[in-house]
Length: 343
Image (cartoon, rainbow, N blue to C red; front, side, top):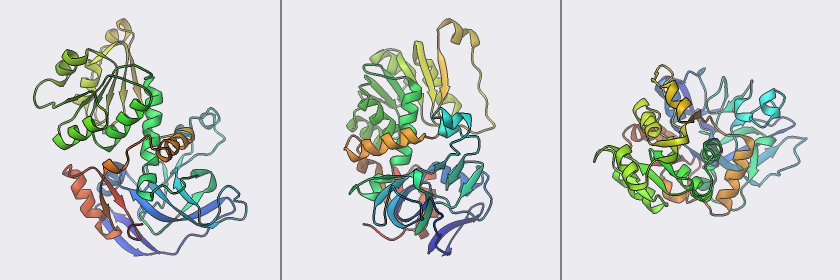
């Protein structure tokens, strides 16, 4: 089979590799589509350390090609989405459903202490417990189940419910999926602050009640003037200034949620008295759980999420470096790798 293997920092080689064989509780998927994530970009640039060579790609869906002897939930020919987080099921975190915090978490093509070959390939090996049937949903849509699962988990962490007001800082693919996730929960009004005019336009189309151009003025002041301080300020960029914006617009008793991935070596100042006196929460959210992945698949299957509007490019394995360059230049939105060509 063909794989796009990361052989060193900044080096991807498309090469032949033996097709994996399933163990007793594993399945082999023929990859139909795999989203490109900023995690893949970090691995490519060396800002997320991995052992080379490794095949990235963790947002995928495909057809079951082979199954192990003890597999009972799926059969060859089934169309499924893949949850890339392989949890142990035995640690205290797993036992209380926090599988994203598993003490020995392994990722298929993504971020973890142990990384297995992922889905920038014709085939990928997956535990049976990590696949979810998607019916006749297009693979390019089903591949968004993983990032949507992260957004479902983030929405859980935010505590946002019906009629709660929200400010989302950043309208990339995750910000726009999170916008739709919160609308499904009845949140509103929802403000979105975003530099890129096309992304602001799409945010409005997807249901944002207010879109803000941060270059046109102070976005915090604009949001305050239009809808007031919000119950949840949610940052989806990963920069200290935008985290501070999300915090500044959060009302007393509210929650500031960090969804964007900050660099590990940055720090920010907070006022402990501010959090004490105003009864505030500052929270992070990491990855997805088995539960949020299953709910994400359900949302996609039942048409509650507009996935197609977010996908701007389909690329082959050889085009992945060019797609990384587009991402760095903020060109387009979601790029999807289709190893064997379009469905």
